[in-house]
Amino acid sequence: MRKLPKTAEFEGSPVISSVVQITNAGDGLSAAMQIAPTELTHGEIVHVVMECEVTKVGFKPVVGAEDKMTRFHVLRAGTATIVQYKTVEAILDKVKADLQEAEDAAHGREPFPTMNASTGRKGTSDGDPIPATS
Image 1 (cartoon, one colour):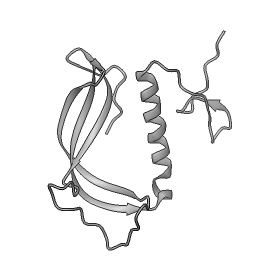
Image 2 (spheres, helix red, strand yellow):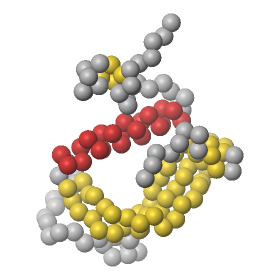
Image 3 (cartoon, one colour):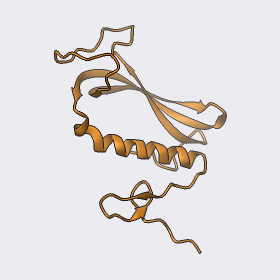
């Protein structure tokens, strides 16, 4: 897996986002995925790690910005397991920050300054220092 390059294009149109569709994951058309015996309660938030195979890649115009494209991926679900939040917390926090940064970039917004937990200094969502302005 690699991050979508900022210069990605498809047939001359910029690719500004990516999405996934997961099949064979109990989607109503296939059998529900098996997990280790466990009891979940209604409204509980769980975190699932899933092994998938990429079965299709394509491009669709962005609704409302048809000159831009979304890269889509169809994944076939394989093995899955429920994990504790602390196991995936840092990964999920990074993904949320990356998604926000991509959305901001797609709409021409500057990154919001954040406090870098490791250095205690202000920086962008990826930890880079805020550039000086004159």
